Amino acid sequence: MKMSGVASRYNPDVHGPKLKERLMRDADPAAVSAHERVYQSLRQRILTGGFLPGKAVTLRGIATQLGVSPMPVREAVRRLIAERALELQDNRRVSVPAMTGPKFEQILFARRTLEPELAIRALPHIDAAALARIEALDDGIDRAMASGDIEGYMRGNHDFHFTIYRLADADMLLGLTESVWLQFAPFMRLVYGRYGTSKLIDQHMLALEAIRKGDAVSLAKAIREDIMQGMRFIGEDALKG
Image (tube, rainbow, N blue to C red; front, side, top):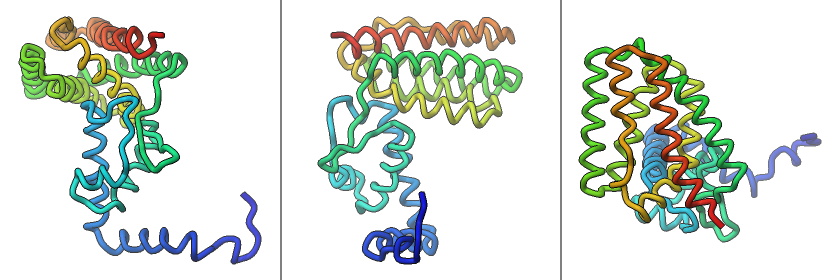
């Protein structure tokens, strides 16, 4: 964007508050930490269904719930909007972006491409200790499924997958996958809320068997099947009509 003159580059009425806010963060590490804590909290809420599709919430309401000032909430929401996890409404409310056919197709393509690849790359790095952690997470998922604990199931499912994926040592692929999960997780929460978790098929068992055998092909197949089960629910529910 072309700029001319100092006045056009800096308007104290517009840039002053933002500049002051940024300088305060630079001078006060606690402010940065507060922003990061709020971001991680909101991110976790999105991943476990704390933001439901079709339901907008105010920034002030979020700040009140978290017991913080609006400033770190605004910063965290900006990041989540950039990640396509939230969108800003005209009335200063935020909501989960709607699911569309093209968006669903791209999410499905991204998951089927990225996640099996991360699992394959992780396999050589899954030692006995890592396998024990993954198995423990799967046990927790089984308990959540049996008791109908939807939030616990979603949290455990996310942790199961990303405990594996983080071992791939592929930060770029991991970051893309994390962004994709933020975009579909709220719709999974909506589906589970309507139909429960008791009818889910535990695809993780096949993934664990493949890990124990060191079988990369079977591991990738199990991950793809797990992806298809969840995304099929979204396709049938969020896109109907």
